[in-house]
Length: 129
Image 1 (cartoon, rainbow, N blue to C red):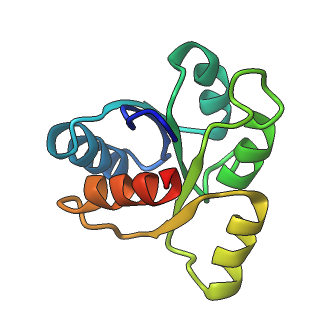
Image 2: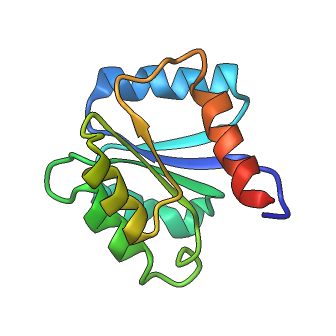
């Protein structure tokens, strides 16, 4: 990546978790975040928001994170946007499955709000090399 990470499109259906993550990413991390409560909202918002990164919860009603990831790859303008999944399901075979789909990384939930932004920034910088 030859550009800095600034805009994160984030999907999380649990309002409390979403609120904590937004605080961690905007206040602590200095990112611009657009939060969505479902995979469908991510699809609807992605083109206009033009994210640098998608941060997707795996388990969501209606359309889960992996399905949203597959659909976003079909949309013009978002087919190459990097994806990081957030999930409590971090068994090695599950993590490998998400990475096999093309996800950059998987962040375990519950996450530490004080280090979340740095964790994402480190993943971004590692992939940019």
